[in-house]
Length: 385
Ligand SMILES: Cc1cc2nc3c(=O)[nH]c(=O)nc-3n(C[C@H](O)[C@H](O)[C@H](O)COP(=O)(O)OP(=O)(O)OC[C@H]3O[C@@H](n4cnc5c(N)ncnc54)[C@H](O)[C@@H]3O)c2cc1C
Image (cartoon, rainbow, N blue to C red; front, side):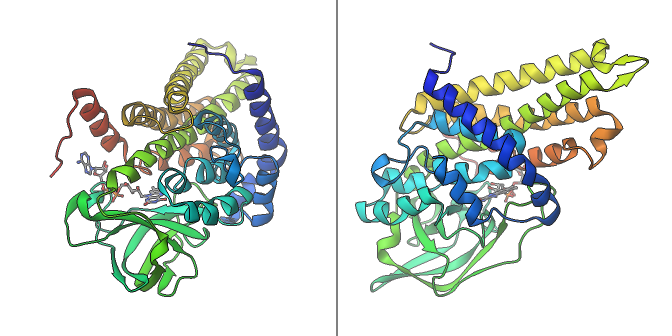
């Protein structure tokens, strides 16, 4: 076991660190205030630096690196803002990995290269108004008629909704109930019968598009089916790596808050000396550091063990659950270090606290992660019905 980065990983991490500080930090406030989305011209900067498709094969334009390098990049960017980390997230641990792992050659050639250039991003659409944690209750139906699937249904809270060009939509392909009837199909933005609901206004993550997807007799070429009926387990396997990305969003935010608190505690004075000289503040900083370090190790373990493949459900769920929990705690502690200024919009801490709150819900709630962990630990699947 080696806890050091190798030379290439160190250089890569430093490069992303500088990009985050020098290019992205300046526009975080704009996303926050205007809820503006990442423009295509910004995405091309990510592409130039090799930050899109980090884990995707080189033959399709990716960098051919492992989940660990993707995690390193997401962590560095989320330290500044999770919005800045989204393009890496979507193209390295997002649903494009389903295409890479399980798609046909034609699908790989069609969807992976434009993801690596930032021309066509793919979002994942699982959740429905009546199927969140109980995902296998989903009712969006795809029926094959001739050369097309006719899709009807509605998806909710889809990150990238309205902005992404393609959607990996979990659909029911037959009348079979539960997981058995579910598969995955790519639905492109301009497909007939596909519209978007209004943009969500979330408490945080401003700048991340999110909306309902509405399918009304939506026509999708049959070649877009990636996972056929009965392949729900494949969708979930690929989702294990997305879980690592979600965990890393929490880690990055927490780390950013810790760094800000460290700096502030050495500058802010009370009773004639810097507040870092008070033991109560030192204890806060030490507790924050322990939480961040522990989350980092859990995420790195899951990602390193995944390598070029996918992580285990146990390691990815442990990492996600823990990182999601400490993300909330550490940002809250950082706010305390900042005193009244932490509560003010003049400083980034209140944004970090709000941004940290989305990840314990997105990608499967922390309660559902605990259900996964217990199931994997005991070697059983517990029926929640
Ligand atoms: C910021 C954000 C981004 C998101 N992005 C996407 C996206 O890109 N694509 C997508 O498809 N979805 C996305 N979602 C939706 C997300 O996956 C769901 O919100 C989540 O799975 C929970 O579903 P729900 O909101 O319907 O809550 P519910 O399932 O109604 O759960 C409500 C509460 O009950 C608890 N609960 C439910 N069942 C159990 C159980 N068996 N045991 C213990 N507790 C239980 C939950 O943990 C939760 O606390 C996003 C959500 C957010 C907030």
